Length: 70
Image (cartoon, rainbow, N blue to C red; front, top):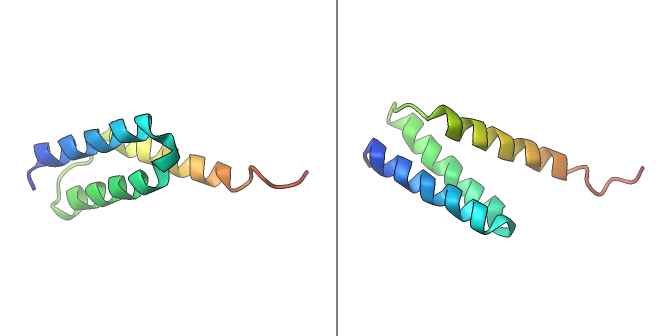
């Protein structure tokens, strides 16, 4: 898959995450797969996409502690 096709796929996934935040975990996995494809092909991962993925990871880590008693 060409770089532009992968970027378009990633863009669609990001749109879906915005539209369906309840499905974020499934869509996040799809995002990881597309980023892995870019890495595997030796293509650069746009910084904004990498940063967004990092933010999603951080949100997941924060969610782990949402139900902890104080």
